Image (tube, rainbow, N blue to C red; front, side, top):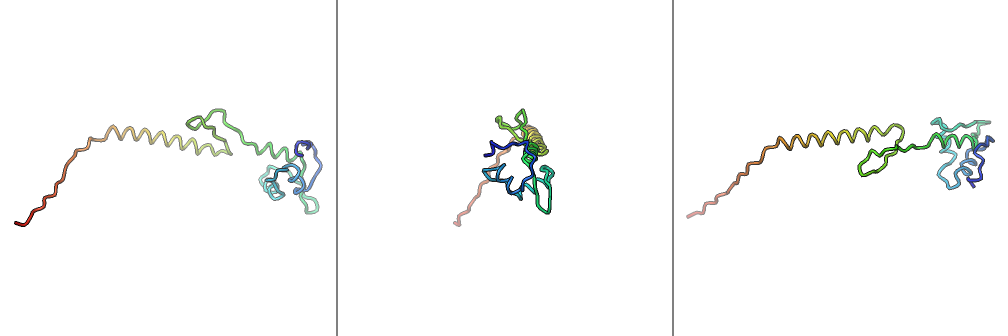
Amino acid sequence: MADSIDWTDDIPRRLSVIARLAFPDGGMTASSLRREAERGRLAIERIAGKDFTSFQAIAEMRKACRVDRKETPSFPHGAFSVKRSGASWVVDAAEEDTAKLEALGKQLSKKAKPRQHSYLATVIMSPD
């Protein structure tokens, strides 16, 4: 059904109706669409206390909500990371901390002295 939608259609429809038509597998409700409007990603019209939007506005919201993939992987073993609203700095910081810890470990292992083994014996005296 979503395949036959004219995404340039600018006719206002109630949020509950358009959620059902634009997202036929579910996942989006009138409440979800209101949250997207509060976040500034969906244009809605409030007429007589009722909220409306159009397929065109839904298409624009979907475009604004797309998640971009980085072109080069930043994780070991070739795993791809997803850039989500500036949170990639966490990964960068973790990679930097890992490199610092590895360097520190190498320095400490060079400075470590060989252990001197000492043996302790317990002597038990027998009463004669």
